[in-house]
Image (cartoon, rainbow, N blue to C red; front, side, top):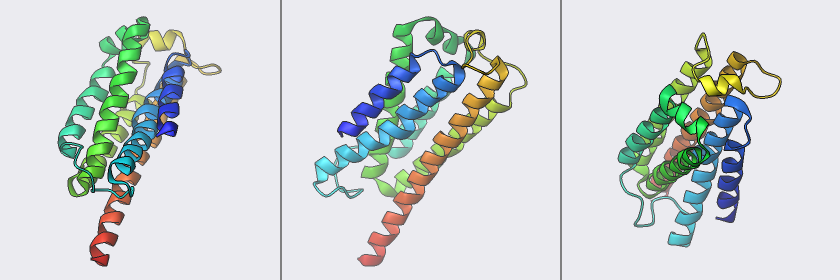
Length: 193
């Protein structure tokens, strides 16, 4: 639990560090794909006392959370909304908090309801991979403020490509591996029963 809080705070600090699109994406992936699952697993472990998936009463519907996360993630990457967050620290903090919140909600729901959680995590992996690829493969910089302040050592387009790659690899892999791990746990529990 403490590790999740520290990871979330580190991601928030990274989001405000001015490290271009690469730092921006690393911060977001730190929130939704690293801190959120650590927090969710920590809370599930505390609730159930044993740390096993599917054994506490909270969480909500995983596919509902996956839909909410999809909307939040894609909306914050629309160029006009991205520009608003880049121009205002308070908006950037709200953005980062929303990423952490929807990430936590999805991971917690997936742990609570593993059967639909597997589908929700794998679907989220696909949309994270798609958005990361679209950003990485864009032929020109998509975000004006980020383009004016790229990560050190990179030009605007290379910074955007690196940021998209961070999202594609970290976000896509974390959700895919989470879904597969949850599926493996379900299959082992079913075989043992």
